[in-house]
Amino acid sequence: MNAVTYLIYAFLAVNMVFNLLGSFSLHRFPDVYTRLHGATKCTTFGTIFAVLAVVVHAAYQLHITGDPKYLQMALHSLVALIALLLTNPTGAHAIAKAAYISGYKPAKAVVDAYEEKLRGGAE
Amino acid sequence: MRFVTAFIWSYMLWLVLTAGSKGLLWSGQELVAGVIFSAIVAFTTKDIIGDNAVRFLNPVKWVGFAVYSIGPLFWGMVKANLDVAYRVITGRIKPGIVRVPVDLENDAQYTILSNSITLTPGTLTVDACPEEKALYVHWINVTEKEPKSSEVIAGPFEKWARRLGR
Image (cartoon, each protein chain N blue to C red):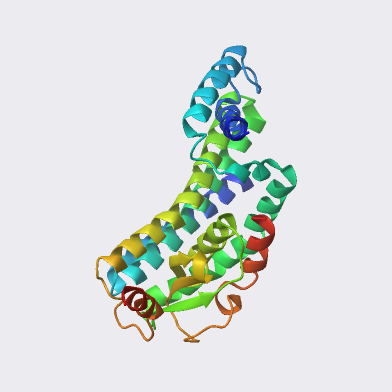
């Protein structure tokens, strides 16, 4: 057990806490929009730390062994992270818009400007 | 030109994915195979990619993107997650969809801004309307029903999006 191992465990712990909160938010929140908040933000943030843990592990092993497979491991995880960061908000936006158009109104909403816009467009 | 842009992007991705095939560098086979596959990908996607996508090949922009995502965006995500975590635990929410006027010029800037908004404090972009220069944002804790600018929601992100997407 050295400092690098502790760092990896710390990253994994952060990842687990936020992914757990993300799943928990699916239970706590009332409708599809608020649930998307939990499902996109918490899981993206948690997964960043999972990837960081992999990268730190791979960089450390590369430093010790010099085996090129660890370089591949680190680079592939980073590419996966970039793809996730680009697609996760895009997917959330697509789900939110599709849900709105198919008629799910936000629960307990205090203001709904999008409804006015859609109604204005129909007239 | 569009073919060249798509080709360079796919070849760079290929190089990243196959690094370490010979020592820490690339073997000759991988380099040749990369040229073939990138050419196929570039040929099939050259009608989809935009005409001025070539501006994103500028390395100065990559530095900008790196600084943006490590600095303001990451800090925003930390705040967003603590905020959402607090709301998950206490269940104290006040949701609503607000119209946010923004001042941006092209699609790339809208993409950057709305993706950043989705990843940060309690907000989720439902729709972007470039024709009326506005974003429709689902806000988990509405404090201002008709915001005049994106300052309340996105902080400094609009400035960054304008600079990076130019």
